Length: 97
Image (cartoon, rainbow, N blue to C red; front, side, top):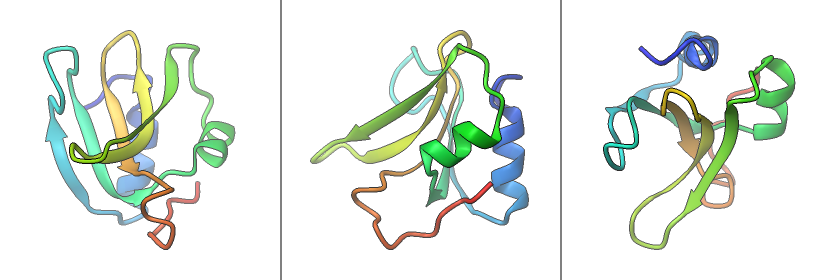
């Protein structure tokens, strides 16, 4: 389970029916629990819909060989909620809060 700063987002995405594709320490020991979903998370819409604390930041990584992702990270607990990078999955399913 992700921290109190991201759990509402995690639950909303799961309740909307999007498949969870990974859960765990994705990158390093600096990641506690990152949850990946099979969808794009439009950062502007998500940030507007959820009253995130200041510690929750938008995160995007567009790697060429080590994955592409975009979502939200809690800087306190090192948890993350990730979806596909919108530039990579332009036609991908979108979570609309």
